[in-house]
Length: 327
Image 1: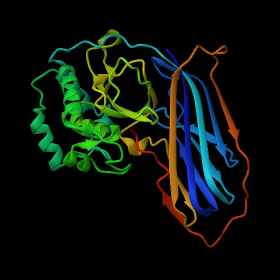
Image 2: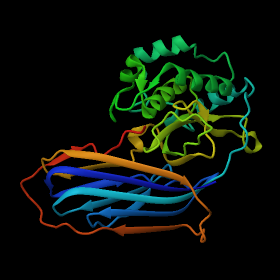
Image 3: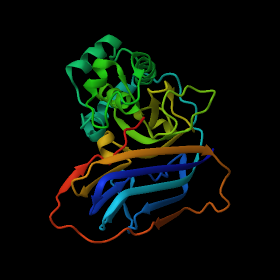
Image 4: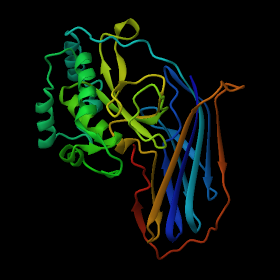
């Protein structure tokens, strides 16, 4: 399946700022069943955009806007091919727990088995684990399928009920949240069982015939858990679970970045120099498309117009939430 993605992010400042520094994680990953065929990033005001790949293979673009500006706009456009994964079985042998324990002892996926910034144990999380009856009595795959469905049933999808930086206890107490909250809660539960589990930031195409509880015009998130005994040569496979829409992830889920939790992979993150406040607007469009005529992967960075370059020495650096909550 081929998709075209357009992700527009705009920051409007209450008064001119003199400098902005930004990181962007919007380029879809190329790995296994997904290939990013084309990608363009347009930035206004004018900026020189550079990029690197972090230790998990995520592409991170970064730039500095040194002049006075009242707004900052980013338009990311991509063409991605996503193949349908092989059918995931309903269950794996109980011996899969032994393989998970061996991996824990080896430390091979240590960062995905330990608590992280947003996926932390808490008393409220313990209450939910007890309520849902989460333990090792079932094989890992059956357990995760059941937990995915239980998360979907236990929480109301309610945009703006939490913030981009909300701890999981807010959603646990209110039983309301968005995909970012549900993903963090499920990750914390799964890691409590020592199953390696990671956060996936990306996009989802909302097919009419499938459950779609997330906001279609926003970014999305879900979990991937390492399941031994399946995949090529039964060596194990990362399997995606989407607790927001109660599904195993397939060819309509488009991966942009992976990390321990949202703190590792926000679509945008930055600071500005000034005392202004910022207003964020985001629009995402994901549509099926035809295969591109030229399937050679390319990266095109197109800067926008310049709005000035005079520094203001007496202003201070202030961190701003140039981040969008994943819906």
